[in-house]
Length: 112
Image 1 (cartoon, rainbow, N blue to C red):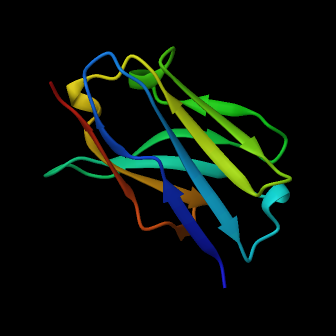
Image 2: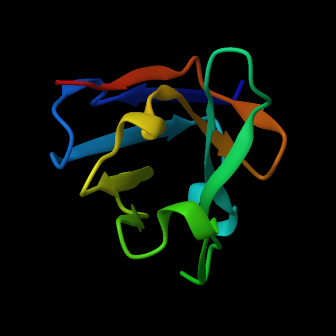
Image 3: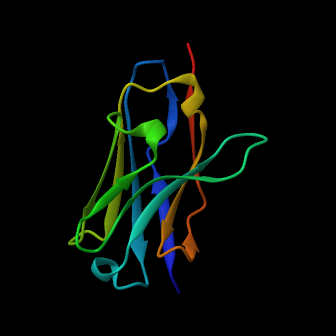
């Protein structure tokens, strides 16, 4: 079955950086679009960034210029480099494959 395992979350100060990773198995990774979503307490889950199998990227307006999504098809892994983090970026971040499969999430907390 498809498994998505996120890692890299944690506590960081405002202005800091984190890199999230999502390792996929059970899927033909290179052929699938991969996405990062996030969900803050009391809010709906929202799309942060996506990358197609061809490498085309898209970003939510609230992370443009600060976050970068990338993928390594040889490792079946998608990354989210998060720079210039803000307290409002605090959320559980989820990896998603093709809009269908979800990881368990990793907590990102931005606080001084």
